[in-house]
Length: 324
Image 1 (tube, rainbow, N blue to C red):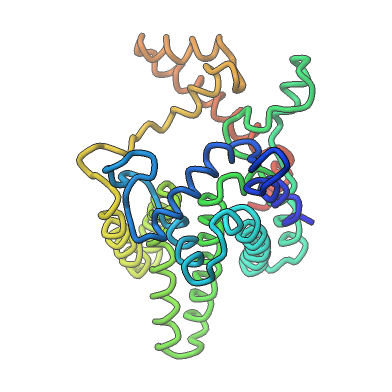
Image 2 (cartoon, one colour; image 1 turned 180 degrees about the vertical axis):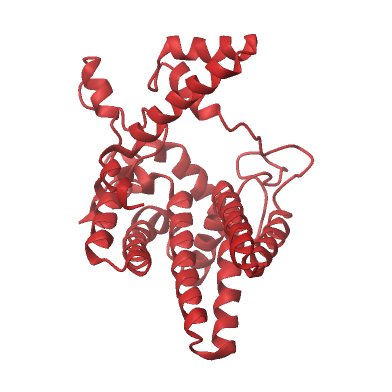
């Protein structure tokens, strides 16, 4: 049911109706863009499909390459792959991998089932804010984060989740087998290589997914070193970082500053933008405290905004916080 619910946001798009080809929601822009990129890549070209003579730069094309390869092998149209075939497969795999990951991590089928339920059906508390404003039920992304039912609207993001949870499952399995000294060195080496490759390709599927994984692994590696004096995870994270940079080279201009580090942007825009949570007094406070150098008040203002951001986006998932 969860996979079906997710897929409903995609399957109607890209089909021909009596009025022509239909696209719903963001697919009217994003979907058409991805179809163009897929068809261009299928021809063996890195040219920008909407700007003649320009190559694709500062854009992650891993998902589009995958669909272009499948299109070339099977001759299935890019439209059908993008809208009707890959989305339900991705949705199913995410649920399956989340269940297995949580079960391996927590050894609890109940927690694993709850995790899958939250993945498929939970949403933000944005509807409370819109109801209080007299705007009816809405506000899915009022606190910025994209919620469960809209996951497939951003297929590269959804596919990055598949890769992340596949990698996490592999990591837990590898760690458990290493601790039990099972399956020999060759099997362990193969799992480690696969883990490194999976996390390395993330930067070409969704750039921020790759960056977050590298930071998370490096942080975990440092903690592991401080606790057990083991450097294995640090080495893995550095190898993944190196391979990620290599994989970015064909499509990323490192001199253009394509990546921007602005950690509080979501918090600031959440309270400053009318189509988000919009709390003008807090937005003014954040700006004025920063300009005045009043860092104590700024700290508490950001703290409250961050609390709203987390709770608002989590929705009913806050019920799982005690078990994290």
